[in-house]
Length: 135
Image (cartoon, rainbow, N blue to C red; front, side):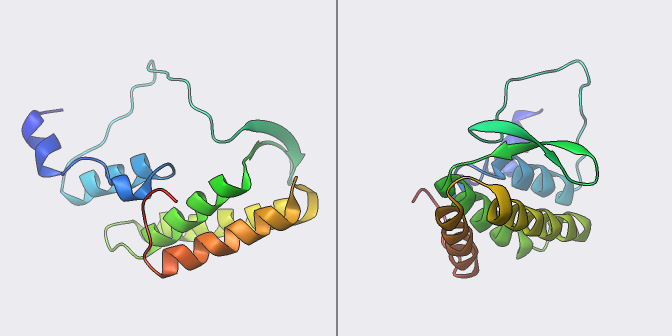
């Protein structure tokens, strides 16, 4: 990437702190009229949570198991992105579906159910109120 492009995009949104930082940056890049390419041969180590588990949801899926505080960030940042005009509507629709599935899965079968649900609700509230940054 050209340095001028990186500088014009103003870097990553640090207010998002742990979740959707790369998602937001990618959407901002696309909204600025640039293209985004994937490199199939590239790989990196990345964890979506503390661990994963297998879950049957219309077929077997690998599902991330996150701490309650991590869910607060995930829900807050998704809500923040829902309010940004440059985020594509299809991503917004899918994000709402995924958040709903996450609530259902953790309400029925997740560890620390009450703490999980409480943090998800707190994350939605934080997002609606426009709060950002590390908690």
